[in-house]
Every structure is written in structure tokens, then in C-alpha cells.
Length: 130
Image 1: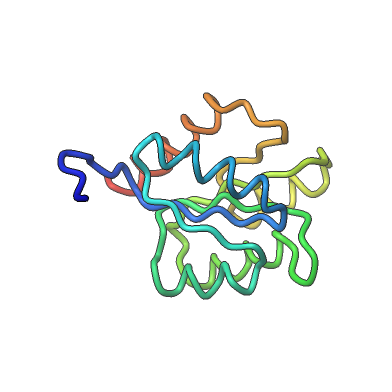
Image 2: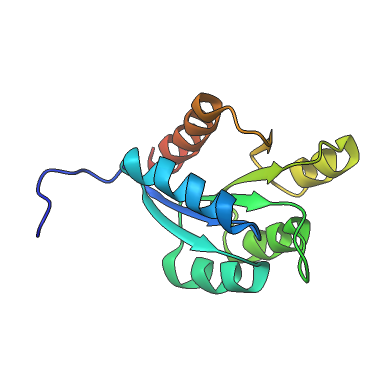
């Protein structure tokens, strides 16, 4: 069954080691007409970024094996223009500051304010598409 008339707003990658967060954000953003990819870890995220070049990455900070900060550094090597919004369950000023210094565009704490999250994503896409 083909869907006609749905305009995709932009391409987003969600990176989180918590499957429930991935599913929740994927459903929310898909309903808002974004093209959404998901990754459960940093290594998977970097591979997807290289292939798909999303406009925005929602990136969890605390992940096993490769932290969000490490992934952010790799994203900036791939493309300085990809919008990166750090997401975390633990608010740490030091980590937030480091993420912003490394080129993150925003820092959002869980539980999410969905309106703020959507506005932040949309702002990054608008900036990229001019």
C-alpha cells in the first residue's frame, strides 16, 4: 500500500542504548513526518551517518563501549554541518559544556519536553536547508 502526499521534513538519526527510548522517539518523530533511522550504539551510529548523512542526530551521552561524546567527535570529523542534539538522563554541567564545546547544537535532559525537542530538531533542519 503506497502512501501519497506525505512530505518528509528531514532525516534524523536517533542513537540510544535504551530500546524503549529508541522506539518512543522513533514513533514520535515518524508521526511528525521525519525520516527516522535508529542506532543502539556509537559504532552503529557512525556507520549509518557515513551512509545516510542525516540532517540531525539525537545522541545519548551515556552509552556502553563508546560514549556520546566520542561519537560526537567522530560526527564532527564526518561532517561539521550535521545538527547534533545530545540527550541524557543525567544532567551534568561539565559534560554539557564539553558537548557544546565539541560542536553539539543542544543538550536535552530526559524525560523529554517533546515540544522543545521537536522545535530544536526543526531549527537544526531549517538551518541546514537554508
